[in-house]
Length: 555
Image 1 (cartoon, rainbow, N blue to C red):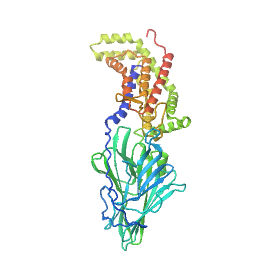
Image 2 (cartoon, rainbow, N blue to C red):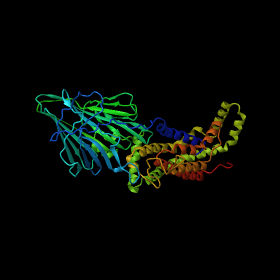
Image 3 (tube, rainbow, N blue to C red):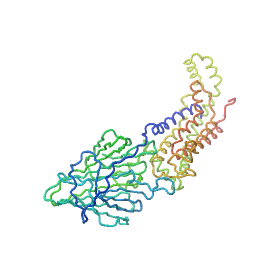
Image 4 (cartoon, rainbow, N blue to C red):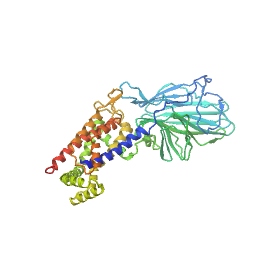
């Protein structure tokens, strides 16, 4: 590469890296302290019986998010599957815990499982409102059966029930399936009164949303009218969503809790700020239903608590796989993930797979790259042969820059040199940049690469971290990348600059290995591995070009 190629290299690379690093560093919010409205502790237990009975307090159908409070006692039912351990609270009949057996929170061998629901991460409440009736905020369901259950080959149903004095009965069935991360819930309201009742099922879900750089976030995600929308920062005002609600929920980069209403038509979904630190409440209402005396009404939905793994999400339906954020290079990122997984099927190590894929891409584009680099080398040699004439023009017109540039252009033209042809040297970079960007988002968001190790690197999707020196994490891969870049730069002969601007740019390029080592310091290790291998291959290519195209005599 000559100075023109290097300049273009830097311009393109700076643009792509600054977009990525700048967004993460400057536009992301600091982590927010997670807060949640706590449910009051149990105060009393309803009378024993097949169905719990309690009048509750009068409630109207809500028009905004309201924190749920209840003083009823509850029972926890633990459900074990081959994929997770779930906890169901009979108070409200809701999921209060969901740990994934196959995913650990950290790379440590003794790490606890990932909790999609639990700790600060809450699940949704389903609230039944009946006009002109006293109803508890959370229905205190009764349950007859064991509290330690296992999902067998045929699945498992957990049946809950509650009866209100006067004739209204509510039954809820939660169905678990082997090998699936989603569950189905069916709610049945039986009107045992002597009159018609108007009821509405309301869903409320609160959690704290935040974003801290590219490696830490917890967002509200929804798909309304087929369009995915994300909220990562604290809200200032209530946000209404118009259109059919396909699904909504909360999640981070790799895991998701989602509610799938399984109902068509325009439905009301909104997200409301509950404090200034990111606590937000999502509300969703099913259509109001009239139930005649002696009749019943049934409504059902799905909920998903699991990894953002495309096959698992697709099984839940309703395009839930679109909850995966592949970044603004969506299609390219998907291709990168598919290629990496394909190569990994042979090597069973994503670090080796990244190296093999990098080499394969270099081999595929090698003829095109060599042709471009040979052309640049030939032009570079022509420029060297014209150095005495260029120096003479610079001296002759040192006080008239415009005339100096015009005369230089005449000199270039008469010797068949096109300064703009240096743009052709950007071809190797243009080939790399889409791969760079796609691999960045693949490493950042694909759960397949989470906790993938390679040699001393224990997680290719995260920045390398061996130990700290004066509070700064020491990392080997970025240093290797900087050294390989420096070697590549030293092997590349530089053309004598034709202007002061070019001379300044050439001086700046000498610091590029240091500058980009610092800029790459906090990027995923897999990306640094790709760029390091690419630099090493560039050294080999440059040595080959230098042998193929000899230096001009006297150069």
